[in-house]
Length: 100
Image 1: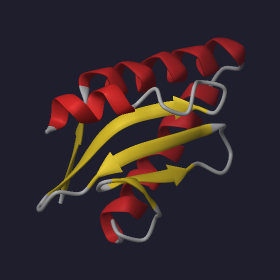
Image 2: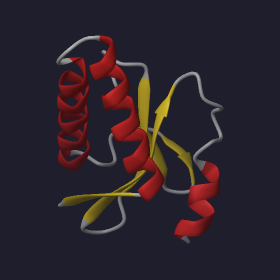
Image 3: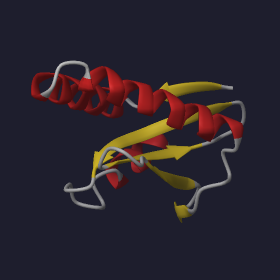
Image 4: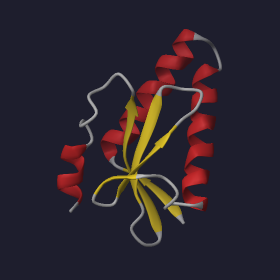
């Protein structure tokens, strides 16, 4: 199973990693490692996490204040958002409309 990022989710991931790296050297790398482990957990058991709406689920990272909003249609994982907890909880919903 492969992971596909919505373009905005990919931008969120990159911006967060850059932010952490500027704060403390290697913290950005640690954030990316945590995201990789989260993606591996999602791939291993995509239905494990709670459905928020339709078929969108949320995975909460433990060390960093972020959540991954994703769908698992068939043979891949589609990450819709990499959302910091301070952002509005509905920020990912507009992306769902464009996903179909």
